[in-house]
Image (cartoon, rainbow over the protein chains, first blue to last red):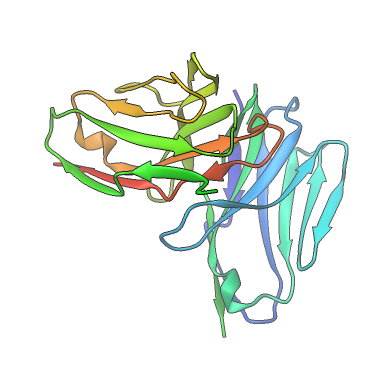
Length: 110
Length: 114
């Protein structure tokens, strides 16, 4: 089955800097790669997703890139703000369901 | 719309007790899921349903049971609770399958087994 590895597990940046979170997956048949953000004590919420026929997708300050050959995808957050502090989860689809990475705790210091 | 509603939010169980976590959604979604979240371990799929009357196992189904008698409700049953089931449980629903579209999560149910 699918296996998703996510790095780093924790990331601390200064406000205004960029943050990059990377994920690798094992099943070349996976076609859908969402990212979820979970603020402390809250529910996960979808922030961006990408499908295998697209290499990059942007939404304001966040972007996701996908390299199907290398089987990895990344989340990029530019001009980070304190409200970006949260745990971010990547995921990949596996036979109709999602396999999640273990999460990255992002801290943005003002 | 209330979205996905879970009850209870918190519960403490003794080893061997049983309980049901309730989940309801009012978005007319066919797909519903139960995940558990352990510290530093991401979200693990317990059970899922693609429609009323249809359920299937996820990654970590042992010790749990589900039913889906209506589109709206997807309760999760814990039989003979064990300390290893201490976790935060999230119910989620989606209009499409989780491999094609957004999942909407409930607020979570924090369960402690002592």
